[in-house]
Image 1 (cartoon, rainbow, N blue to C red):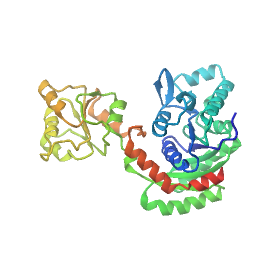
Image 2: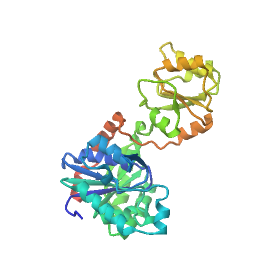
Image 3: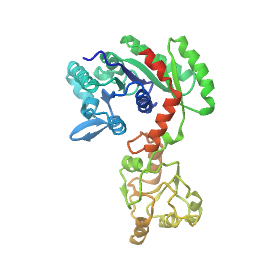
Image 4: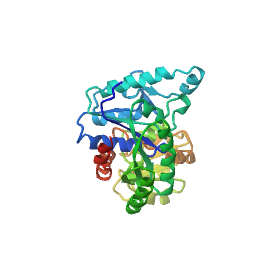
Length: 364
C-alpha cells in the first residue's frame, strides 16, 4: 500500500459533530499547499445508489465541490448497509475488507499530493466488524485530528476517551478542532480547552464559530427526508428554513407568522390558511416564506390546488400529521449538500480563518 503520500484522518467524538464540515473546509485550505488532493471515506453509513454502486453521501458532496478526478467507488470502498453487520458476524472476512480499503486508498492517492481521510463517528464506530475508526486509521498509516463540539470539560473528557482507543492501535492524535462554539465564548474556550488539551499532550488546532445557517435545512432536504409530494413548481427548493410554525389557529392569526424563512406546517384541509399564505400578509405575496407543508395526507380541493400551483414558494403534501411532521423537521440531521452553495462558501471561509493549517502540516 502507498505509504509516501501525506495523509490525515478526520475523526470525531460523536456523530454529527462536524467531521464533514471540517473536511470540506480543510480540503480548500490544504489546496494552498497541496494542489492535488484526494479524499476517501473508507467506511460509510449514509449512502445513495449511483450506477448500482452504494456511495456515501459525503463522497458525492466532496466530488461535486472539488472535482476529485477519482472513481466514486474508490472514495467509498465500504458502505454499511442494513444487513452488513449480520453478514460479517456470521462469516467474518476482515482481511478482504482491509484489502479493499487499502486498494481503494492506493487508487485515490494516485498522482495526488495529499489525501484526506474521513471517519464515521467516534473512534470505536465500526468495532463490531473489526473496522473501527482507530483500526482504519492504523491500516492507512494516518495521524488523526479529532473534531468535537464546544464546551470545556465535556469535549476534553470525550477527546481523551477517543484518544485512548487510537493510542491502543498505535495511532497518533495530532490535535483537536472544537466546532460550533458561540462567537462570544471563543476566547474563553480557546484559552481553557487549549490548556486542558496541552496537559494531555494534544494541540488545539482551531475553534470554529457556530453558524446557524449550517444547522438550517433546505425545503428540498425536508421534502426528501419526509418523502412528501410537491404540489407546485416553485423557482427553487433550496430556500433555507429559519423557523417552523404549526398553523393550528385561524387564518387571521396565522398571518402574523408569514415571515421570511418560515416553514408553515398545517393540515391539508385548512384551506383558509393556505389561501391566506398565497395572498400574502403584507400585500407583497408570500415569496419570502420558505414553504408550506400540508399534513395528514389531506389534499386541498381543486380551486385551492389552482392557487397553490401559482405560488412561488414550495407546497408539500405529507402523509403524517402536523405533530409528527414538526417533530421530524425539528430532529432532522442537516447535512451539507452539493446544491448548498452559500453553506459551502461559508464553510471554506470559517475553516480557513479559524483552523491552524500550518500547524497541521508541521504535525504530519
